[in-house]
Image (cartoon, rainbow, N blue to C red; front, side, top):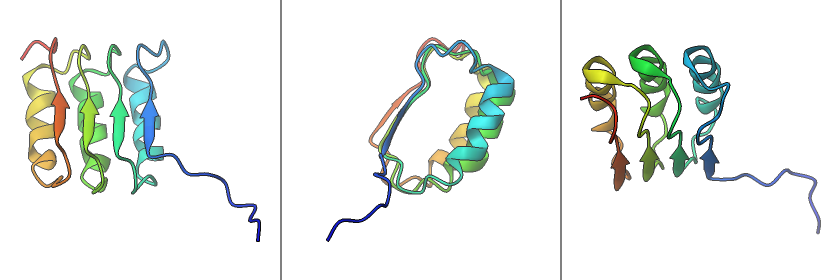
Length: 104
């Protein structure tokens, strides 16, 4: 029996996405809040900054299946990584985290 349900992906890649700055990070965070099965997220090479990291932190806490998170080269600074660390500790599936190149 065929279904018309859309195929759901467990990966999201927005590497070096020219529109994914602070404002884009906020919009992405809203969408990620609905992606409970997300296992792989690559946002490397964007400029989301510390404030964008705060937006992401709010929804990443709900991504229980997240196993791979790449946030390298995003200008997160200490403030952004502190906020992320507060929620990522609860992500039990997280096996790979890349924060390189973030001035921390």
